Image (cartoon, rainbow over all chains, first blue to last red; front, side, top):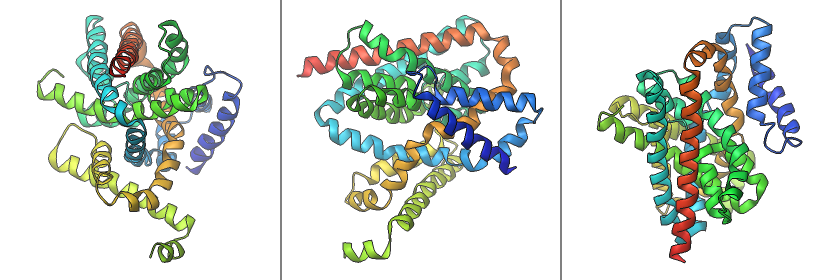
Length: 223
Length: 129
């Protein structure tokens, strides 16, 4: 099954190289997913085989979330006085955003399970998949929703900031990272380093706040 | 003391040790999650534990020994997501069935999260300065 590992790494390498020409639209996660998905479909390769082969990669997702502790700590020290402000904005945006997501899906007739899959979507896939696993719903679907959210945020985030005239790179980067996790952060780093840093803090904070929000909601029996 | 430590643990062994530490935190978090049944992922629990330790005097040691491996992991985070995303191949049916609800929830949910965070952070920052 080691071919799955080779396929993933090679396609990823090529997709990241290609991304240099795309200004955020040729997102490497999106491109890799489409190419590998196409290979599996055309080759009639069972998804199970691919999953088994890529265990060495997926096994590192949990440790990568743990590693974000360093990003939070470093960002917190650097932003110093601004930190309380960003935490307040992060908490409010996470709760309002998750509630809106669930409300919109519910109003359009999504099932209870689907609501649980959608709720954690603005956290990085590593977190949303784990939250879905803990809630007993489809983890890979939760991961996909996170990735789609990330791609949306990476493409629409920076132009939208200009539209609403948020010029501060700290506030803008933070919003991109909080709402569009690692994929948005990769884009923010291309814009400028200050944005990238506060985006990394937003991403890390979301991976902490989203599970806590879901915990709060489940304690109140809303989910 | 620091010099001797540096000599005993070169760059690559230190990186591997750091990787082992991060994986151990994730594993410990998973164990706590399973034992307590908390609806928080084990990896998040591990992250909280590490964050708490970073507020103690252990910070210097952790930064020296664990941060290099942790930074490598953060750098490749988008790659780690690819195998999960490929799983969508198996869920086309479910997505197509609920396409409208899913697309609306994703787009509106993202917009609201993003705008709330951007506008609130911008406004609070201007007010506090």
